[in-house]
Amino acid sequence: MYACDNDVVDHQVVNLEFDGGATASFTMTAFSPMALRKTRIFGTHGSLEGDGVRLTVTDFVTGDVEVIDTNPPAEGHSGGDRGLVTAFLDALGRNDPSPILSDPRESLHSHEIAWAAEEARLTGTVVALEEQRLSPARAPMGHP
Image (cartoon, rainbow, N blue to C red):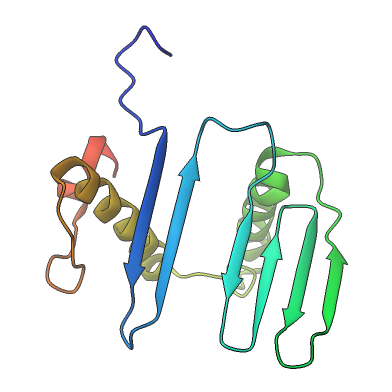
Protein backbone atom coordinates (compact mmCIF):
# COMPACT_ATOMS: atom_id res chain seq x y z
CA MET A 1 0.00 0.00 0.00
CA TYR A 2 2.93 2.37 0.54
CA ALA A 3 4.38 1.83 -2.95
CA CYS A 4 1.22 2.32 -5.01
CA ASP A 5 -1.18 5.05 -6.07
CA ASN A 6 -3.40 4.62 -2.98
CA ASP A 7 -4.75 8.06 -2.13
CA VAL A 8 -7.23 7.02 0.55
CA VAL A 9 -7.10 9.19 3.63
CA ASP A 10 -5.38 7.53 6.63
CA HIS A 11 -6.84 9.81 9.29
CA GLN A 12 -9.57 12.41 9.26
CA VAL A 13 -11.72 14.54 11.53
CA VAL A 14 -15.09 15.66 10.18
CA ASN A 15 -17.21 18.20 12.05
CA LEU A 16 -20.90 18.33 11.24
CA GLU A 17 -23.52 20.90 12.13
CA PHE A 18 -27.14 19.90 11.71
CA ASP A 19 -30.29 21.97 11.34
CA GLY A 20 -31.24 23.19 14.80
CA GLY A 21 -27.61 23.58 15.91
CA ALA A 22 -26.77 20.01 16.98
CA THR A 23 -23.15 19.12 16.21
CA ALA A 24 -21.19 15.92 15.74
CA SER A 25 -17.56 15.09 15.14
CA PHE A 26 -16.32 11.98 13.40
CA THR A 27 -12.71 10.88 13.85
CA MET A 28 -11.22 8.13 11.71
CA THR A 29 -7.73 6.82 12.39
CA ALA A 30 -6.38 4.01 10.23
CA PHE A 31 -3.10 3.59 12.10
CA SER A 32 -4.15 2.32 15.48
CA PRO A 33 -3.88 -0.94 17.38
CA MET A 34 -6.21 -3.63 16.11
CA ALA A 35 -9.45 -2.80 17.84
CA LEU A 36 -13.13 -2.63 17.10
CA ARG A 37 -14.74 0.62 16.09
CA LYS A 38 -15.61 2.93 18.94
CA THR A 39 -18.69 5.12 19.01
CA ARG A 40 -19.37 7.80 21.60
CA ILE A 41 -22.59 9.81 21.59
CA PHE A 42 -23.17 12.56 24.14
CA GLY A 43 -26.49 14.24 24.79
CA THR A 44 -27.79 16.69 27.32
CA HIS A 45 -28.90 13.97 29.75
CA GLY A 46 -26.56 11.11 29.06
CA SER A 47 -24.09 9.28 26.87
CA LEU A 48 -23.88 6.09 24.87
CA GLU A 49 -20.56 4.38 24.21
CA GLY A 50 -20.00 1.27 22.16
CA ASP A 51 -16.98 -0.69 21.00
CA GLY A 52 -18.59 -3.53 19.07
CA VAL A 53 -18.65 -5.77 22.13
CA ARG A 54 -20.20 -3.63 24.86
CA LEU A 55 -22.68 -0.80 24.94
CA THR A 56 -22.48 1.52 27.95
CA VAL A 57 -25.41 3.82 28.67
CA THR A 58 -24.79 6.56 31.24
CA ASP A 59 -27.59 8.71 32.64
CA PHE A 60 -26.10 12.06 33.67
CA VAL A 61 -29.15 12.95 35.77
CA THR A 62 -29.30 9.82 37.95
CA GLY A 63 -25.71 8.66 37.59
CA ASP A 64 -26.95 5.21 36.55
CA VAL A 65 -24.70 3.23 34.24
CA GLU A 66 -25.92 0.22 32.28
CA VAL A 67 -23.53 -2.05 30.42
CA ILE A 68 -24.98 -4.27 27.70
CA ASP A 69 -22.99 -7.16 26.23
CA THR A 70 -23.83 -7.15 22.53
CA ASN A 71 -22.06 -10.47 21.87
CA PRO A 72 -21.25 -9.68 18.24
CA PRO A 73 -20.52 -12.46 15.78
CA ALA A 74 -16.91 -12.62 14.55
CA GLU A 75 -17.73 -11.71 10.96
CA GLY A 76 -17.28 -8.79 8.59
CA HIS A 77 -18.06 -5.48 10.27
CA SER A 78 -19.01 -7.28 13.50
CA GLY A 79 -21.88 -9.08 11.78
CA GLY A 80 -23.21 -5.96 10.09
CA ASP A 81 -22.52 -7.31 6.60
CA ARG A 82 -24.55 -10.46 7.29
CA GLY A 83 -27.31 -8.39 8.89
CA LEU A 84 -27.68 -6.16 5.83
CA VAL A 85 -27.84 -9.11 3.43
CA THR A 86 -30.23 -11.05 5.68
CA ALA A 87 -32.58 -8.06 5.99
CA PHE A 88 -32.54 -7.56 2.22
CA LEU A 89 -33.25 -11.24 1.50
CA ASP A 90 -36.00 -11.33 4.15
CA ALA A 91 -37.64 -8.26 2.59
CA LEU A 92 -37.54 -9.86 -0.85
CA GLY A 93 -38.69 -13.28 0.33
CA ARG A 94 -41.65 -11.92 2.28
CA ASN A 95 -42.39 -9.04 -0.09
CA ASP A 96 -42.20 -6.85 3.01
CA PRO A 97 -39.79 -3.88 3.19
CA SER A 98 -39.96 -3.59 7.01
CA PRO A 99 -36.67 -5.48 7.67
CA ILE A 100 -34.81 -2.74 5.74
CA LEU A 101 -34.24 0.10 8.20
CA SER A 102 -33.36 2.89 5.77
CA ASP A 103 -34.89 3.82 2.46
CA PRO A 104 -32.81 4.67 -0.63
CA ARG A 105 -33.11 8.43 0.01
CA GLU A 106 -31.69 8.08 3.57
CA SER A 107 -28.92 5.82 2.31
CA LEU A 108 -28.04 8.30 -0.43
CA HIS A 109 -27.98 11.14 2.10
CA SER A 110 -25.44 9.31 4.29
CA HIS A 111 -23.26 8.87 1.20
CA GLU A 112 -23.66 12.57 0.37
CA ILE A 113 -22.27 13.40 3.80
CA ALA A 114 -19.25 11.16 3.18
CA TRP A 115 -18.72 12.65 -0.29
CA ALA A 116 -18.96 16.18 1.17
CA ALA A 117 -16.34 15.29 3.80
CA GLU A 118 -14.03 14.04 1.04
CA GLU A 119 -14.65 17.16 -1.04
CA ALA A 120 -13.88 19.34 1.98
CA ARG A 121 -10.65 17.41 2.57
CA LEU A 122 -9.54 17.69 -1.04
CA THR A 123 -10.43 21.37 -1.44
CA GLY A 124 -9.76 22.65 2.09
CA THR A 125 -13.24 24.18 2.22
CA VAL A 126 -16.44 23.85 4.21
CA VAL A 127 -19.17 22.08 2.24
CA ALA A 128 -22.80 22.90 3.04
CA LEU A 129 -25.15 20.20 1.82
CA GLU A 130 -28.25 22.41 1.81
CA GLU A 131 -26.51 24.74 -0.66
CA GLN A 132 -24.71 22.11 -2.67
CA ARG A 133 -26.31 18.69 -3.06
CA LEU A 134 -23.80 16.18 -4.31
CA SER A 135 -24.94 14.09 -7.23
CA PRO A 136 -23.47 10.75 -8.29
CA ALA A 137 -21.77 12.49 -11.20
CA ARG A 138 -19.83 14.70 -8.74
CA ALA A 139 -18.93 11.97 -6.27
CA PRO A 140 -15.20 12.02 -5.43
CA MET A 141 -12.90 9.18 -6.45
CA GLY A 142 -15.41 7.66 -8.88
CA HIS A 143 -17.91 6.57 -6.22
CA PRO A 144 -21.43 6.05 -7.54
